[in-house]
Length: 134
Image (cartoon, rainbow, N blue to C red):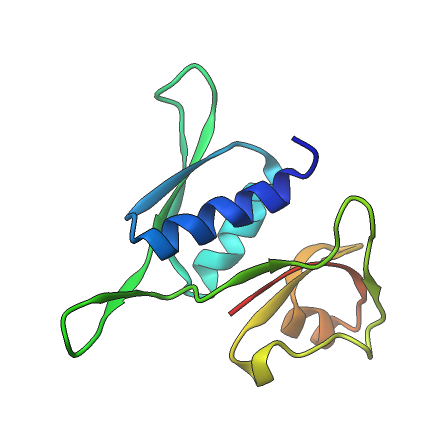
């Protein structure tokens, strides 16, 4: 696997669109931090480490809202990887883009760790633009 972050985002996107209640992802510290940000922003219900198999996995419980006709709509409409292995995208503190006019957010890898675009603007930090979620 060339890009584990892209794999994580794809697994979450596919599970969300298919209506699965949870998704398992191979464990890493960076993926765990991204999942914590998603949980803190209210896009997923829970994130935990699953050690029931021979390998450690991250178990993400997805969040759905019910519509008027009784169907379950996922909270995550889309996740998009911005910076890739082959082309890193860096942004300065005053050039951090807004996602969907503020309805979504970006995750940025700064010198102080991973943070959302709002936190990076408040801290006055730029960095690598990892992904966008809305």
